[in-house]
Amino acid sequence: MSGRRSPLRAAVYGHPIAHSLSPVLHRAAYAALGLDGWTYDAFDVTIPQLPEHIARLDAGWAGLSLTMPLKAAVLDLVDHVEPLAQVVGGANTVVVDAQGRPSVAANTDVYGIVQAFREAGVTTASTAAVLGGGATASASLAALAQLGVAAPVVYVRSVARAASLMPAAHRMGIDITLRPLHEAHRGVTQVDLVVSTVPEDGADVVAAELGPLSGVLLDARYDVRPTPLLHAWQRSGGVGITGERMLLHQACEQVRLMTGHDAPLAQMDAALEAALALT
Picture 1: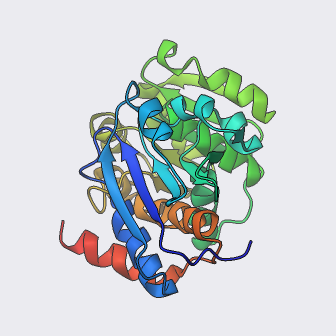
Picture 2 (picture 1 turned 135 degrees about the vertical axis):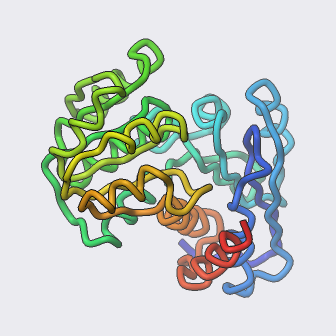
């Protein structure tokens, strides 16, 4: 893809959005790439407001990042949904074409998860577990499939709330087993890889009861470093990956899609570390 040089706008949409570190990452990328005049902002946008915001896009835009709860809602608002985003059931990226149309919806969360594991030395695995049943859990299933896991176990607080995960897994061609979250502390000790997508109250319960283990955990949370789950995991003998590694790598792929340039990983990483040090 040839690079886009004219100053363009980009932004992250979500609700709530104040916590987002996407502006830090993308602005660092623009500075390192010499994309003078490019801007990246954050806007609080709800699901009912999303169609109006998408309709306002014009040729001055490069693209959008999308966080919760907009990842599924955007699929009906673009010209083309990339196959991976269709399979996962959600997109976190919209690319705007030269005519100002929201032309492509893509999912870079899957890429971010895979790269975070590979960065930790994981190239393949046979068994895995996912904690949680939301949009990030769906992306985790696709990432684990790329790493060779065909039948992961998914631990959820409510099977009913994870209903959308079953058809997503079917589209991916993988066979998942749903189990209650309160059983996770036993099951996660027996697998190669674990991805936790649950909030603090759910993950901390698992952390409190962990036994000896040897697998690799990616905790998608990055508001606390290390999270209680990650700390307990490493104390129990496992390898832990902090959530900002996924965040960094998914943003790198977004930068490539929106700008046409390979992302400056080192500069984005440094900017992320500086921002996290202030929190």
